[in-house]
Image (cartoon, rainbow, N blue to C red; front, side, top):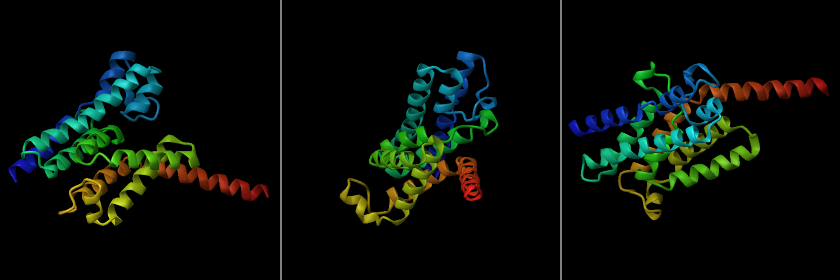
Length: 213
C-alpha cells in the first residue's frame, strides 16, 4: 500500500510541474492563465507567444512528465506496469490540476501520451487515428481532442481484456483497460467546457439554418 501511495504522490508532483506557465512567463512576461483559452498547455503556449520553440518545448517536456512519472512508478516495483499506470494517471491529474497554480492547469493530452508510451504504447497511435478522423469532420482542435478521447475511453471499456494480450499488452488483470478508461476520463473532465461550447454552437447553427429555410 505504501508503494501505491508513493507512486501516486510522485506522479502528481512530477505532472504538476507548470511547464507552459514558466516558459510563457520567461518568454512574454504573461500569466498564460489570463490570456487566450487560459489553458496551461502546448497549444495556448504557442498561440500566446507565437513561438514554435516555446510550444515545442512545452509539448516535449509535458510528454516527458507523463513518461517519467510512469517510469518512476515502474521503478518502485521492479517494472510493474500497475505502478506505472497509477503514476502516469496521477501525473495527468497533476498537470490538469497543479497545486502550484491554484489547480488551474492544462488538459492532460501530452502527459497522458507520455504515460501511455510507457504503459501501452499502442494507445498513442490509436488516439492519433481517432483524432485525425474527428478533426476531418469538425475542423476544430479541442473538440477533436475530446471526441477522440471519448471514443478511446469507450473502446477501452468494451474491448475484452484478452484482446490486449494479442497486441502485446498485459491481459491477465485488465490493466490496459482500466488505464485507458481512467486516463481518458481525466482528459475528458478538462474538456467539459469545450464540449459544451461546441454543442451550443452546433445547436445555434442548426436553429439558424432552420429559420433560414
